Length: 535
Image 1 (cartoon, rainbow, N blue to C red):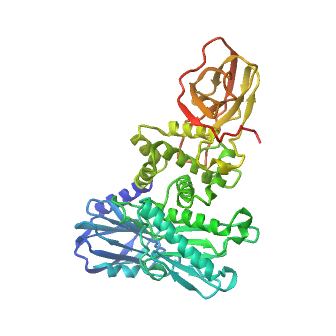
Image 2 (spheres, rainbow, N blue to C red):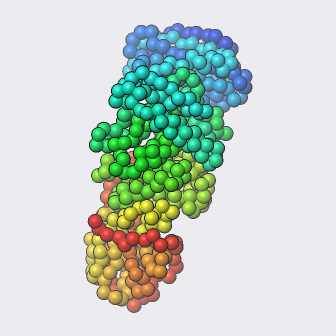
Image 3 (cartoon, rainbow, N blue to C red):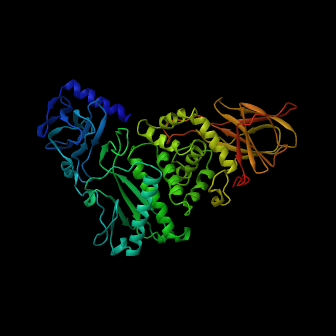
């Protein structure tokens, strides 16, 4: 894993030996190859000092890679490519503590070799201006103009395919500042790291470009992480993979006018993409669903009147049997956007502190472990939380449910008789829903599978949904309910979301005189409930 790789680099560097200096202005030249895979220098920084470090290949096919460790060995900055046009490296950092810092120069790939020149410059914050390459700019179709707000620099043109109106630019500037006010000032999220002077100054750069074709295909916006990874000074923790962000947004959203007011879509996109920038202030590389589900959820918190987030619900409702968090769905990866409802489910139960804890843990742990550590704090677990979420989806117990239209979770089957019923199949952390509608009576239902799945019964009546855990099997009756559903849930999960597998099962249904399950695990408000269908 990536953190293990960095620790390995430090150990390797220690085994090779390193130089210790006060590097006010130092430079080194040498060669990296199999006999000398790394070069390391330690140097002293006082709190508030800034350091700029660059590494250029001077011969061979060397692709340089820089990693900076603080006095206790924590990675505070790293860089592979200085910009998108070259393989040389550069990074900068402002010290939070006094002590000896270590920079490790290595090869991006083990089979590379060549000469290098390493330069280290220590001084005040002005040394970080060396990071200003202006290489992260996008090329607009006409002469570039600028609108500067308190926290953003809007790049736009009035010419060519990217042309905008001055009125639209002003709307964007106002929207971006409102997003900052809501997410940073009001909700308390940490400000994203500055990009130094990329784009001309320290403000976050937003490029308005024609990202949608005439049919509305394309993207509404995008957030691109910067080149340097390390700590976000806006947080109390020390991150290893925080980064600055550059934003792009469509130049008018008119191609999607059929979906709603283009300005509403612009506002939702601004909230979504800026939250990706906040996420980059914790970690730039983890499970996709963390990022997209959180960003869609934040759309609803930032601009609740636009209701754009509600439109994504149908994707999660359409494929509940698929592996939770996977982008391998028939709609081209849209399900993870609909999984914002899981974030809402967490917040409904534990408050917004759950989402703050999740992103703090994403900065420290990889994959599902970040969510597992978050839920441990609340004496909860991933299977428990996902089972609740799938039940909540039956009830549609969400504030924005009136805007879901007629969407309800997909019904895989209707059980209308006793006997053995073959199930549809369910992937990791997914669920199948079966309508229970045999002749009136009491029945025992048992799972026949590999021993990993769980069975639930969910009854709906009088504006309330009640869920009963049946484990491997239990006794149910539709008496007293307008609707009764069985939910087969797969509690297994693994980090490789591109290789999810179906678990097959059958249900044995037998008439019985035994008492029905009586201990409800969850009760939901079902005022927005819509009967499940298999359409």
